Length: 137
Image (tube, rainbow, N blue to C red; front, side, top):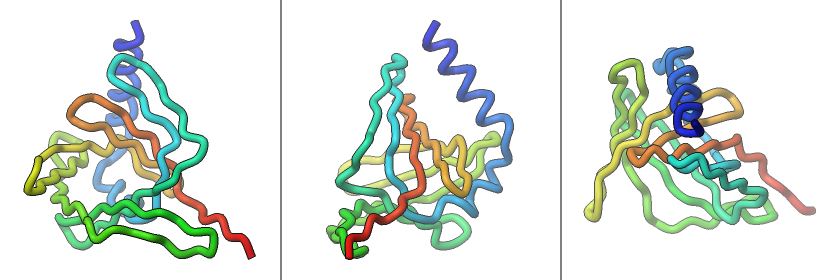
């Protein structure tokens, strides 16, 4: 029953919005708020040590990198950047990654000013919220 509910939610979300509109909201700093595994198991994230920076750089290319926020508003990062090619296919916005170690596909189900939902090829759903920096003076 959980799998059926999960599948229906994905279908409803993906059918109700135009993936072309998602592109304007993808670029930015995102933190994971919840992960839903393909068996329906949920994992909540209250605090994240790292966040994702995602940027669409032109008509079909983008980057993603992991950042560690500091309390003074700066970020620490490694030099690792995952590049992706994105395509709108079958009413979906798909991101195609390829590194020297692997290649994979992710699909953006929803992208708005403050929420991002991405599902990977293993049917793991990632729910993101727009990152708001914490600063301590």
